[in-house]
Amino acid sequence: MKLLFVSLLILCFSQSAIAAPLTVDQQIEQWLAPIAHTMTSIIFYSVEVAGTQIPLIVGWLIIAALSFTFYFGFLNFKGFSHAIKVIRGDYSNPNDPGEVSHFQALTTALSGTVGLGNIAGVAIAVSIGGPGATFWMIIAGLLGMSSKFLECSLGVKYRQISANGEVLGGPMYYLRDGLAELGYQKLGKGLAVFFAICCVIASLCGSNMLQSNQAYQQFIIAFAGEGGFWQDNGWLFGLILAILIATIIIGGIKSIAKVTVRVVPLMAGVYLSAALFVILSHIEQIPQAISLIINGAFNPQGVTGGIIGVMIQGIQRSTFSSEAGVGAASIAHATASTKEPVREGYVALLEPFIDTVVICTITALVIVITGAYVDVSGIDGVAMTSRAFASVIWWFPYLLSIAVLLFAISTMVSWAYYGSIAWRYLVGDSKWLNLGYKMLFCCCTVIGASVSLNSVIAISDSMFFSMAIANIIGLYLLAPGIKKDLTSYNATYK
Image (cartoon, rainbow, N blue to C red; front, side, top):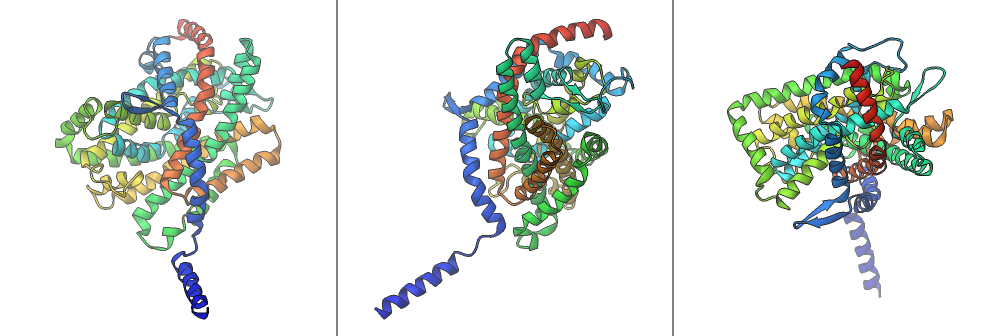
Protein backbone atom coordinates (compact mmCIF):
# COMPACT_ATOMS: atom_id res chain seq x y z
CA MET A 1 0.00 0.00 0.00
CA LYS A 2 2.82 2.39 0.89
CA LEU A 3 4.50 1.57 -2.39
CA LEU A 4 1.28 2.35 -4.27
CA PHE A 5 0.87 5.67 -2.39
CA VAL A 6 4.45 6.72 -3.16
CA SER A 7 3.97 5.78 -6.82
CA LEU A 8 0.83 7.95 -7.05
CA LEU A 9 2.69 10.90 -5.50
CA ILE A 10 5.55 10.53 -7.97
CA LEU A 11 3.06 10.35 -10.85
CA CYS A 12 1.25 13.49 -9.70
CA PHE A 13 4.45 15.51 -9.31
CA SER A 14 5.77 14.33 -12.67
CA GLN A 15 2.52 15.36 -14.40
CA SER A 16 2.72 18.76 -12.70
CA ALA A 17 6.24 19.20 -13.94
CA ILE A 18 5.27 18.24 -17.47
CA ALA A 19 2.13 20.41 -17.54
CA ALA A 20 3.76 23.78 -16.89
CA PRO A 21 1.43 26.69 -16.08
CA LEU A 22 -0.01 28.36 -19.16
CA THR A 23 1.22 31.86 -19.98
CA VAL A 24 -1.24 34.75 -20.32
CA ASP A 25 -0.92 34.52 -24.10
CA GLN A 26 -1.64 30.76 -24.06
CA GLN A 27 -4.68 31.19 -21.81
CA ILE A 28 -6.15 33.82 -24.13
CA GLU A 29 -5.52 31.59 -27.16
CA GLN A 30 -7.12 28.59 -25.41
CA TRP A 31 -10.25 30.66 -24.73
CA LEU A 32 -10.46 32.24 -28.19
CA ALA A 33 -9.77 29.28 -30.50
CA PRO A 34 -13.16 27.50 -30.05
CA ILE A 35 -15.01 30.78 -30.68
CA ALA A 36 -13.05 31.35 -33.88
CA HIS A 37 -13.82 27.84 -35.11
CA THR A 38 -17.57 28.20 -34.48
CA MET A 39 -17.82 31.58 -36.20
CA THR A 40 -15.88 30.39 -39.24
CA SER A 41 -18.11 27.34 -39.71
CA ILE A 42 -21.21 29.58 -39.75
CA ILE A 43 -20.08 32.58 -41.83
CA PHE A 44 -18.04 30.57 -44.33
CA TYR A 45 -20.56 27.84 -44.99
CA SER A 46 -19.36 26.29 -48.24
CA VAL A 47 -20.75 24.29 -51.14
CA GLU A 48 -18.74 22.01 -53.37
CA VAL A 49 -18.18 23.13 -56.97
CA ALA A 50 -15.90 21.14 -59.28
CA GLY A 51 -14.38 19.40 -56.27
CA THR A 52 -13.63 22.67 -54.45
CA GLN A 53 -15.37 24.08 -51.38
CA ILE A 54 -16.60 27.60 -52.18
CA PRO A 55 -17.77 29.84 -49.30
CA LEU A 56 -21.18 31.25 -50.23
CA ILE A 57 -20.34 34.65 -48.73
CA VAL A 58 -17.40 35.11 -51.16
CA GLY A 59 -19.70 34.41 -54.11
CA TRP A 60 -22.24 36.84 -52.62
CA LEU A 61 -19.65 39.64 -52.69
CA ILE A 62 -18.10 39.05 -56.09
CA ILE A 63 -21.48 38.61 -57.84
CA ALA A 64 -22.61 41.92 -56.33
CA ALA A 65 -19.43 43.69 -57.47
CA LEU A 66 -19.82 42.29 -60.98
CA SER A 67 -23.51 43.26 -61.08
CA PHE A 68 -22.86 46.85 -59.99
CA THR A 69 -20.02 47.17 -62.50
CA PHE A 70 -22.43 46.43 -65.36
CA TYR A 71 -25.33 48.34 -63.77
CA PHE A 72 -23.35 51.59 -63.55
CA GLY A 73 -21.85 51.21 -67.01
CA PHE A 74 -18.27 50.42 -65.92
CA LEU A 75 -18.07 53.59 -63.82
CA ASN A 76 -15.07 52.05 -62.04
CA PHE A 77 -13.07 52.81 -65.21
CA LYS A 78 -14.95 55.75 -66.73
CA GLY A 79 -15.11 57.74 -63.49
CA PHE A 80 -11.42 57.58 -62.62
CA SER A 81 -10.40 60.97 -64.04
CA HIS A 82 -13.37 62.77 -62.44
CA ALA A 83 -12.48 61.21 -59.09
CA ILE A 84 -8.97 62.67 -59.36
CA LYS A 85 -10.42 66.14 -60.05
CA VAL A 86 -12.64 65.92 -56.97
CA ILE A 87 -9.70 64.87 -54.78
CA ARG A 88 -7.69 67.75 -56.22
CA GLY A 89 -10.36 70.13 -54.94
CA ASP A 90 -11.80 71.28 -58.27
CA TYR A 91 -15.37 71.07 -56.93
CA SER A 92 -14.79 71.89 -53.25
CA ASN A 93 -16.94 74.47 -51.50
CA PRO A 94 -16.08 75.50 -47.93
CA ASN A 95 -19.77 76.14 -47.25
CA ASP A 96 -20.84 72.58 -48.06
CA PRO A 97 -22.08 70.53 -45.06
CA GLY A 98 -19.73 67.98 -43.50
CA GLU A 99 -16.75 67.70 -41.16
CA VAL A 100 -13.72 66.84 -43.31
CA SER A 101 -12.43 67.43 -46.86
CA HIS A 102 -12.71 64.89 -49.68
CA PHE A 103 -9.02 64.08 -49.28
CA GLN A 104 -9.33 63.63 -45.51
CA ALA A 105 -12.35 61.36 -45.95
CA LEU A 106 -10.40 59.29 -48.49
CA THR A 107 -7.30 59.00 -46.29
CA THR A 108 -9.43 58.07 -43.27
CA ALA A 109 -11.19 55.36 -45.25
CA LEU A 110 -7.89 54.24 -46.80
CA SER A 111 -6.31 54.00 -43.37
CA GLY A 112 -9.05 51.52 -42.52
CA THR A 113 -8.34 49.41 -45.62
CA VAL A 114 -4.63 49.92 -46.31
CA GLY A 115 -3.45 47.85 -43.39
CA LEU A 116 -1.86 44.54 -42.65
CA GLY A 117 -4.27 42.86 -45.04
CA ASN A 118 -1.97 44.30 -47.70
CA ILE A 119 1.07 42.69 -46.09
CA ALA A 120 -0.03 39.64 -44.11
CA GLY A 121 -3.17 38.96 -46.16
CA VAL A 122 -1.38 38.95 -49.51
CA ALA A 123 1.30 36.65 -48.12
CA ILE A 124 -1.37 34.22 -46.92
CA ALA A 125 -3.14 34.28 -50.30
CA VAL A 126 0.08 33.59 -52.23
CA SER A 127 1.25 30.89 -49.80
CA ILE A 128 -2.08 29.01 -50.10
CA GLY A 129 -3.17 29.82 -53.64
CA GLY A 130 0.22 30.34 -55.27
CA PRO A 131 1.23 33.34 -57.42
CA GLY A 132 -2.01 33.02 -59.44
CA ALA A 133 -4.03 34.32 -56.46
CA THR A 134 -2.55 37.76 -57.25
CA PHE A 135 -4.37 37.92 -60.58
CA TRP A 136 -7.74 37.25 -58.97
CA MET A 137 -7.02 39.79 -56.25
CA ILE A 138 -6.56 42.45 -58.94
CA ILE A 139 -9.78 41.45 -60.73
CA ALA A 140 -11.74 41.51 -57.49
CA GLY A 141 -10.25 44.90 -56.61
CA LEU A 142 -11.25 46.44 -59.95
CA LEU A 143 -14.81 45.10 -59.67
CA GLY A 144 -15.03 46.20 -56.05
CA MET A 145 -14.64 49.84 -57.10
CA SER A 146 -18.28 49.80 -58.24
CA SER A 147 -19.54 48.46 -54.91
CA LYS A 148 -17.51 51.09 -53.08
CA PHE A 149 -18.96 53.88 -55.25
CA LEU A 150 -22.52 52.79 -54.48
CA GLU A 151 -22.21 52.31 -50.73
CA CYS A 152 -20.32 55.57 -50.15
CA SER A 153 -22.76 57.58 -52.26
CA LEU A 154 -25.52 56.15 -50.06
CA GLY A 155 -23.50 56.99 -46.94
CA VAL A 156 -23.59 60.70 -47.82
CA LYS A 157 -27.16 60.66 -49.14
CA TYR A 158 -28.68 59.31 -45.92
CA ARG A 159 -26.30 60.78 -43.33
CA GLN A 160 -27.55 62.80 -40.37
CA ILE A 161 -25.97 66.12 -39.41
CA SER A 162 -26.61 67.54 -35.93
CA ALA A 163 -27.04 71.21 -35.07
CA ASN A 164 -23.35 71.45 -34.07
CA GLY A 165 -22.21 69.94 -37.39
CA GLU A 166 -21.49 66.41 -36.17
CA VAL A 167 -22.08 63.79 -38.88
CA LEU A 168 -23.49 60.30 -38.38
CA GLY A 169 -23.66 58.06 -41.43
CA GLY A 170 -23.04 54.63 -42.85
CA PRO A 171 -25.00 51.47 -43.67
CA MET A 172 -27.04 51.66 -40.45
CA TYR A 173 -28.63 54.88 -41.67
CA TYR A 174 -29.10 54.14 -45.36
CA LEU A 175 -30.45 50.68 -44.59
CA ARG A 176 -32.96 52.09 -42.11
CA ASP A 177 -33.98 55.30 -43.86
CA GLY A 178 -33.41 54.32 -47.49
CA LEU A 179 -35.40 51.10 -47.27
CA ALA A 180 -38.13 52.89 -45.29
CA GLU A 181 -38.58 55.22 -48.29
CA LEU A 182 -39.16 52.16 -50.46
CA GLY A 183 -41.76 50.77 -48.05
CA TYR A 184 -39.46 48.19 -46.40
CA GLN A 185 -39.39 49.81 -42.97
CA LYS A 186 -39.17 46.63 -40.85
CA LEU A 187 -36.61 45.03 -43.15
CA GLY A 188 -34.52 48.22 -43.08
CA LYS A 189 -34.54 48.43 -39.30
CA GLY A 190 -33.63 44.76 -38.94
CA LEU A 191 -30.77 44.94 -41.43
CA ALA A 192 -29.47 48.16 -39.84
CA VAL A 193 -29.30 46.59 -36.37
CA PHE A 194 -27.72 43.41 -37.75
CA PHE A 195 -25.07 45.44 -39.58
CA ALA A 196 -24.34 47.61 -36.52
CA ILE A 197 -23.82 44.56 -34.29
CA CYS A 198 -21.51 42.93 -36.86
CA CYS A 199 -19.61 46.21 -37.32
CA VAL A 200 -19.01 46.59 -33.59
CA ILE A 201 -17.68 43.04 -33.30
CA ALA A 202 -15.61 43.43 -36.48
CA SER A 203 -14.04 46.62 -35.16
CA LEU A 204 -13.10 44.91 -31.93
CA CYS A 205 -11.83 41.68 -33.51
CA GLY A 206 -10.99 41.98 -37.19
CA SER A 207 -9.58 45.45 -37.65
CA ASN A 208 -8.11 45.67 -34.19
CA MET A 209 -6.84 42.29 -33.07
CA LEU A 210 -5.34 41.31 -36.44
CA GLN A 211 -3.43 44.59 -36.63
CA SER A 212 -1.95 44.33 -33.13
CA ASN A 213 -1.19 40.64 -33.71
CA GLN A 214 0.84 41.21 -36.87
CA ALA A 215 2.52 44.35 -35.55
CA TYR A 216 3.70 42.29 -32.58
CA GLN A 217 4.89 39.43 -34.82
CA GLN A 218 6.96 41.79 -36.96
CA PHE A 219 8.36 43.43 -33.83
CA ILE A 220 9.53 40.01 -32.62
CA ILE A 221 11.09 39.22 -36.00
CA ALA A 222 12.97 42.52 -36.34
CA PHE A 223 13.90 43.53 -32.81
CA ALA A 224 13.25 40.96 -30.11
CA GLY A 225 14.37 37.63 -31.57
CA GLU A 226 13.27 34.16 -30.53
CA GLY A 227 13.15 33.27 -26.84
CA GLY A 228 13.60 36.82 -25.54
CA PHE A 229 11.53 38.75 -23.01
CA TRP A 230 8.90 39.78 -25.57
CA GLN A 231 8.39 36.27 -26.96
CA ASP A 232 5.66 35.33 -24.47
CA ASN A 233 4.55 38.83 -23.52
CA GLY A 234 2.45 39.89 -26.45
CA TRP A 235 -0.09 41.30 -24.02
CA LEU A 236 2.47 43.88 -22.85
CA PHE A 237 3.21 44.98 -26.41
CA GLY A 238 -0.55 45.20 -26.97
CA LEU A 239 -0.96 47.32 -23.84
CA ILE A 240 1.58 49.88 -25.05
CA LEU A 241 -0.12 49.98 -28.45
CA ALA A 242 -3.55 50.35 -26.79
CA ILE A 243 -2.40 53.41 -24.84
CA LEU A 244 -1.15 55.01 -28.06
CA ILE A 245 -4.45 54.26 -29.84
CA ALA A 246 -6.47 55.69 -26.96
CA THR A 247 -4.72 59.07 -27.21
CA ILE A 248 -5.83 59.36 -30.86
CA ILE A 249 -9.42 58.08 -30.85
CA ILE A 250 -10.70 60.16 -27.92
CA GLY A 251 -11.01 63.24 -30.16
CA GLY A 252 -13.39 61.68 -32.72
CA ILE A 253 -13.35 61.95 -36.51
CA LYS A 254 -11.59 65.33 -36.74
CA SER A 255 -8.74 64.11 -34.55
CA ILE A 256 -8.53 60.85 -36.49
CA ALA A 257 -8.58 62.66 -39.86
CA LYS A 258 -5.70 64.91 -38.76
CA VAL A 259 -3.64 61.81 -37.97
CA THR A 260 -4.57 59.77 -41.05
CA VAL A 261 -3.98 62.64 -43.50
CA ARG A 262 -0.33 62.54 -42.37
CA VAL A 263 0.17 58.87 -41.56
CA VAL A 264 -1.40 57.33 -44.69
CA PRO A 265 0.89 59.10 -47.22
CA LEU A 266 3.89 58.48 -44.94
CA MET A 267 3.26 54.78 -44.43
CA ALA A 268 2.44 54.24 -48.11
CA GLY A 269 5.61 56.09 -49.09
CA VAL A 270 7.87 54.11 -46.74
CA TYR A 271 6.40 50.75 -47.68
CA LEU A 272 6.12 51.28 -51.43
CA SER A 273 9.63 52.74 -51.67
CA ALA A 274 11.12 49.67 -50.00
CA ALA A 275 8.95 47.31 -52.06
CA LEU A 276 9.87 48.98 -55.35
CA PHE A 277 13.54 48.78 -54.40
CA VAL A 278 13.18 45.02 -53.90
CA ILE A 279 11.39 44.66 -57.25
CA LEU A 280 13.94 46.77 -59.13
CA SER A 281 16.80 44.80 -57.60
CA HIS A 282 15.27 41.74 -59.32
CA ILE A 283 14.28 43.62 -62.47
CA GLU A 284 15.45 40.84 -64.78
CA GLN A 285 13.02 38.43 -63.06
CA ILE A 286 9.93 40.62 -63.44
CA PRO A 287 8.74 38.95 -66.69
CA GLN A 288 9.06 35.53 -65.06
CA ALA A 289 7.12 36.69 -61.98
CA ILE A 290 4.32 38.10 -64.14
CA SER A 291 4.26 34.84 -66.10
CA LEU A 292 3.94 32.87 -62.83
CA ILE A 293 1.03 35.08 -61.75
CA ILE A 294 -0.88 34.77 -65.03
CA ASN A 295 -0.18 31.07 -65.58
CA GLY A 296 -0.92 30.33 -61.94
CA ALA A 297 -4.30 32.01 -62.25
CA PHE A 298 -5.48 29.68 -65.02
CA ASN A 299 -3.20 26.67 -64.73
CA PRO A 300 -2.17 26.33 -61.09
CA GLN A 301 0.23 23.58 -60.08
CA GLY A 302 -0.04 21.81 -56.74
CA VAL A 303 -2.81 24.04 -55.40
CA THR A 304 -5.78 22.43 -53.65
CA GLY A 305 -8.91 22.96 -55.72
CA GLY A 306 -7.05 24.01 -58.88
CA ILE A 307 -8.21 27.18 -60.61
CA ILE A 308 -11.32 27.51 -58.39
CA GLY A 309 -9.18 27.27 -55.26
CA VAL A 310 -6.78 29.95 -56.52
CA MET A 311 -9.67 32.21 -57.50
CA ILE A 312 -11.35 31.91 -54.09
CA GLN A 313 -8.12 32.71 -52.23
CA GLY A 314 -7.51 35.82 -54.34
CA ILE A 315 -11.08 37.11 -54.10
CA GLN A 316 -11.34 36.42 -50.37
CA ARG A 317 -8.14 38.23 -49.49
CA SER A 318 -8.96 41.10 -51.87
CA THR A 319 -12.33 41.62 -50.19
CA PHE A 320 -10.75 41.53 -46.75
CA SER A 321 -8.21 44.12 -47.86
CA SER A 322 -10.42 46.56 -49.80
CA GLU A 323 -13.67 45.94 -47.86
CA ALA A 324 -15.68 46.62 -51.04
CA GLY A 325 -19.26 45.55 -50.40
CA VAL A 326 -18.75 45.40 -46.65
CA GLY A 327 -19.99 48.99 -46.20
CA ALA A 328 -17.83 50.23 -43.35
CA ALA A 329 -15.92 52.82 -45.41
CA SER A 330 -19.17 54.71 -46.03
CA ILE A 331 -19.08 55.70 -42.35
CA ALA A 332 -15.94 57.76 -43.02
CA HIS A 333 -17.05 59.07 -46.41
CA ALA A 334 -20.34 60.26 -44.91
CA THR A 335 -18.38 62.95 -43.03
CA ALA A 336 -17.04 64.58 -46.23
CA SER A 337 -17.93 68.22 -46.88
CA THR A 338 -20.18 68.01 -49.92
CA LYS A 339 -23.80 68.47 -50.93
CA GLU A 340 -23.52 65.89 -53.72
CA PRO A 341 -23.61 62.25 -52.53
CA VAL A 342 -22.45 60.94 -55.91
CA ARG A 343 -19.36 63.18 -55.81
CA GLU A 344 -18.11 61.40 -52.72
CA GLY A 345 -18.94 58.10 -54.41
CA TYR A 346 -16.48 59.03 -57.16
CA VAL A 347 -13.83 59.67 -54.50
CA ALA A 348 -14.54 56.33 -52.85
CA LEU A 349 -14.06 54.26 -55.99
CA LEU A 350 -10.35 55.11 -55.82
CA GLU A 351 -9.99 53.12 -52.58
CA PRO A 352 -9.97 49.55 -53.96
CA PHE A 353 -7.69 50.68 -56.79
CA ILE A 354 -5.08 52.14 -54.41
CA ASP A 355 -5.48 49.43 -51.80
CA THR A 356 -5.71 46.28 -53.90
CA VAL A 357 -4.66 47.00 -57.47
CA VAL A 358 -1.58 49.01 -56.45
CA ILE A 359 -0.40 48.09 -52.94
CA CYS A 360 -1.49 44.44 -52.84
CA THR A 361 -0.08 43.80 -56.30
CA ILE A 362 3.29 45.29 -55.38
CA THR A 363 3.38 43.19 -52.20
CA ALA A 364 2.59 40.05 -54.19
CA LEU A 365 5.33 40.87 -56.72
CA VAL A 366 7.85 41.24 -53.89
CA ILE A 367 6.88 37.82 -52.51
CA VAL A 368 6.82 36.08 -55.91
CA ILE A 369 9.92 37.71 -57.35
CA THR A 370 12.05 36.79 -54.32
CA GLY A 371 10.62 33.26 -54.05
CA ALA A 372 9.68 33.89 -50.41
CA TYR A 373 6.48 31.84 -50.80
CA VAL A 374 8.45 28.67 -51.59
CA ASP A 375 9.24 26.32 -48.68
CA VAL A 376 7.36 28.32 -46.05
CA SER A 377 6.86 25.72 -43.34
CA GLY A 378 6.35 27.58 -40.07
CA ILE A 379 6.27 30.98 -41.78
CA ASP A 380 3.00 32.82 -42.32
CA GLY A 381 1.53 36.28 -42.62
CA VAL A 382 3.84 39.23 -42.20
CA ALA A 383 6.81 36.91 -41.52
CA MET A 384 6.78 35.82 -45.16
CA THR A 385 6.80 39.41 -46.43
CA SER A 386 9.61 40.21 -44.01
CA ARG A 387 11.55 37.26 -45.38
CA ALA A 388 11.14 38.64 -48.91
CA PHE A 389 12.41 42.07 -47.87
CA ALA A 390 15.38 40.62 -45.96
CA SER A 391 16.47 38.65 -49.01
CA VAL A 392 17.58 41.92 -50.62
CA ILE A 393 18.90 44.03 -47.75
CA TRP A 394 19.30 42.63 -44.23
CA TRP A 395 17.97 45.72 -42.46
CA PHE A 396 14.78 45.99 -44.58
CA PRO A 397 12.76 44.05 -41.96
CA TYR A 398 13.42 46.95 -39.58
CA LEU A 399 12.01 49.36 -42.18
CA LEU A 400 9.07 46.99 -42.66
CA SER A 401 8.49 47.06 -38.90
CA ILE A 402 8.02 50.84 -39.04
CA ALA A 403 5.59 50.49 -41.95
CA VAL A 404 3.72 47.67 -40.19
CA LEU A 405 3.30 49.75 -37.04
CA LEU A 406 2.01 52.71 -39.07
CA PHE A 407 -0.34 50.42 -41.00
CA ALA A 408 -1.62 48.92 -37.77
CA ILE A 409 -2.17 52.23 -35.99
CA SER A 410 -3.92 53.89 -38.93
CA THR A 411 -6.25 50.93 -39.47
CA MET A 412 -7.08 50.64 -35.80
CA VAL A 413 -7.94 54.31 -35.29
CA SER A 414 -10.22 54.33 -38.35
CA TRP A 415 -12.01 51.20 -37.24
CA ALA A 416 -12.33 52.53 -33.72
CA TYR A 417 -14.34 55.35 -35.29
CA TYR A 418 -16.43 52.97 -37.43
CA GLY A 419 -17.20 50.83 -34.42
CA SER A 420 -18.04 53.83 -32.25
CA ILE A 421 -20.62 55.08 -34.79
CA ALA A 422 -22.20 51.61 -35.02
CA TRP A 423 -22.15 51.32 -31.22
CA ARG A 424 -23.77 54.73 -30.91
CA TYR A 425 -26.49 53.67 -33.32
CA LEU A 426 -27.28 50.73 -31.02
CA VAL A 427 -27.05 52.35 -27.56
CA GLY A 428 -27.77 56.04 -28.21
CA ASP A 429 -25.86 59.15 -27.17
CA SER A 430 -24.86 58.09 -23.66
CA LYS A 431 -21.42 59.61 -22.97
CA TRP A 432 -20.41 56.82 -20.60
CA LEU A 433 -21.58 53.96 -22.80
CA ASN A 434 -19.67 55.40 -25.76
CA LEU A 435 -16.57 55.86 -23.62
CA GLY A 436 -17.00 52.23 -22.54
CA TYR A 437 -16.78 51.11 -26.17
CA LYS A 438 -13.46 52.90 -26.63
CA MET A 439 -12.09 51.27 -23.48
CA LEU A 440 -13.25 47.85 -24.72
CA PHE A 441 -11.58 48.54 -28.07
CA CYS A 442 -8.26 49.17 -26.33
CA CYS A 443 -8.64 45.95 -24.30
CA CYS A 444 -9.08 43.98 -27.53
CA THR A 445 -5.84 45.54 -28.81
CA VAL A 446 -4.08 43.80 -25.91
CA ILE A 447 -5.82 40.47 -26.62
CA GLY A 448 -4.96 40.62 -30.33
CA ALA A 449 -1.23 40.72 -29.66
CA SER A 450 -1.56 37.64 -27.44
CA VAL A 451 -3.18 35.04 -29.70
CA SER A 452 -2.13 32.94 -32.69
CA LEU A 453 -2.52 34.22 -36.24
CA ASN A 454 -4.93 31.40 -37.11
CA SER A 455 -7.50 32.40 -34.49
CA VAL A 456 -7.23 36.09 -35.31
CA ILE A 457 -7.58 35.51 -39.07
CA ALA A 458 -10.62 33.27 -38.49
CA ILE A 459 -12.47 35.84 -36.38
CA SER A 460 -11.37 38.74 -38.61
CA ASP A 461 -12.67 37.15 -41.79
CA SER A 462 -15.91 36.01 -40.14
CA MET A 463 -16.86 39.44 -38.84
CA PHE A 464 -15.85 41.36 -41.96
CA PHE A 465 -17.81 39.16 -44.28
CA SER A 466 -20.86 39.00 -42.00
CA MET A 467 -21.38 42.76 -42.47
CA ALA A 468 -21.74 42.20 -46.21
CA ILE A 469 -24.85 40.05 -45.72
CA ALA A 470 -27.02 43.00 -44.67
CA ASN A 471 -25.16 45.66 -46.64
CA ILE A 472 -25.47 44.07 -50.08
CA ILE A 473 -29.19 43.39 -49.67
CA GLY A 474 -29.56 47.14 -49.14
CA LEU A 475 -27.27 47.98 -52.05
CA TYR A 476 -29.37 45.95 -54.50
CA LEU A 477 -32.57 47.67 -53.36
CA LEU A 478 -31.14 51.21 -53.24
CA ALA A 479 -29.01 51.12 -56.41
CA PRO A 480 -31.76 52.50 -58.72
CA GLY A 481 -31.97 55.71 -56.66
CA ILE A 482 -28.23 56.29 -56.89
CA LYS A 483 -28.30 55.60 -60.63
CA LYS A 484 -30.84 58.43 -61.04
CA ASP A 485 -28.64 60.70 -58.91
CA LEU A 486 -25.62 59.75 -61.03
CA THR A 487 -27.41 60.66 -64.28
CA SER A 488 -28.43 64.03 -62.85
CA TYR A 489 -24.95 64.71 -61.45
CA ASN A 490 -23.15 63.87 -64.68
CA ALA A 491 -25.50 66.09 -66.66
CA THR A 492 -24.67 69.00 -64.34
CA TYR A 493 -20.95 68.60 -63.63
CA LYS A 494 -19.31 66.40 -66.23
